[in-house]
Image (cartoon, rainbow, N blue to C red):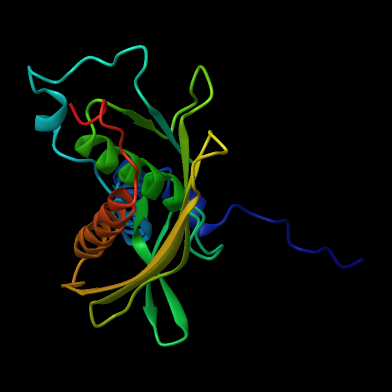
Length: 221
């Protein structure tokens, strides 16, 4: 009968019994793991907001208190194209939408635009309550902004097309509708540049909407 040789421990296991060889092996594994982790590490993710108007407006000592008869304006959530309404920061390259691998918006873009428009308008009318937050009672007016296009291309050309409506609670008052086609150029070298350019565009749109807002004589004083 032919006997097969018994399986013996590998040379590697024999060597690892030697303390010096075992230490060298463990050191090699540790270094290899460190290099592997370093190669897989991604750059830190940056979060951006469209920002808010300067805190100087909200900290003015002479800022008037709201009276019980103050007009209230509810800014509805701004509608933007579906492909933009996320936390992705994107720029356009022809027909291609290029997403930033390093940066994101802190909130969905539609929410950030709504917040900025509401705060920009509120800064011009300290005697009115202009907000995108829920109100305790029915608002005097409601503002609805719809953005059909909001693109920033790789060359720094920004384009924004929007229309809006100001709807009074009083049916005897007229409904106000308007629209705007806005363009602007600026640097887009970094994601911070893109965020700053888009912020300027939204403020420009807010100023257009604000110009259509009817203001009573009591709210002007």
